[in-house]
Length: 468
Image (cartoon, rainbow, N blue to C red; front, side, top):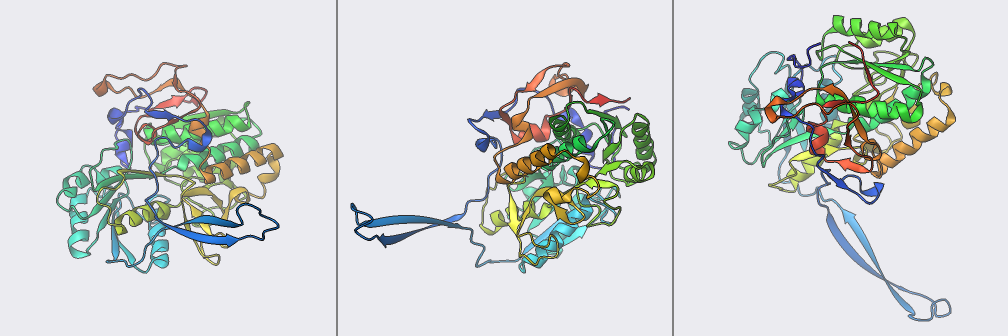
């Protein structure tokens, strides 16, 4: 495979001339509780301080007999909304059968039910049809009165939104980050820390494999995929040091015949657990046909899409884009003229839900990303047939790491060092080469900045086996 080959989906992800490995722009933190050294923070909330006086009995408290207790209550006001929020969605691909654009539409459908002041409009297939993103965005603003514009693929937002942001200073423009993190005052770059759930999937994959061979059918060689496979691999090795991760490139995000060919080649190597970073269902079909475990990505393909059953899907994760959008809505409604330009939300960010919600019944919070399979979350998301195969100590580790990431006190990229395998893409435009095999690019105990994770992790981790 030519790693510099252009692709048709989120193509900017593989134009790695915009990324490079260099000094990690990271903060060394004193403990795991502060690992988000480079993360964006939540919008400021309105803090109300209430003072309450409590008088205690003299026989129990001698001096003083009157105790003054200060209680701090924090609440975020979304009251007195001056205008309706309308989001125009410039979708690079199509909604039908998609766990990417399709899941983002599900996100705004949910938000519309939660927030009566919110509405959305969309144009799909913009990149795949070769349409002009500028034209779509302008129509949303002038015709539909959209005040937030979202591009679901990097090529749907760049360079279009850079050109438009200055013309519409009161509009928020949002663009998914591929590898280019450029921004403007009102052009924000956004993503979700899917890798946190993929680390948990790695723990589970390491626990259920019986051949100690796990495979990934990878689309293009790009930053997003190296970040994904890095987290997945770290999880595998934490659960099962004897397991090996094999990857083979498809070269495109969507190429069903090639995806099938690559998946079958990995099965021929003996892998009994397979996942993919591509867009068709062919890897899933191969798992069904060969009777091996499938690990899902991006969304709950069993519960939300009905594409398979837990007889094949060992676990999956769901990306709740609605949480990311909610962060941005609050900034907009607060009248913030200079919002954070890089929004990278993880498992510790969530929106609240009523207990009788139809999406995850019984759950009152919806984290930005989480294990989800057959509409169940956490450990319950593991297939009933797969779960008995996993040693109890690994299940406890999955539960503990998930709880830590939900609390925002742990991250696989803080915990582990990242060592280059020597595979990657050189960046001649920046005079940078791929780090030689064995180079510790990021030491343990250091949290990489968001900019580094999103734009500069352009190498494969040492220990992953590349099948050519």
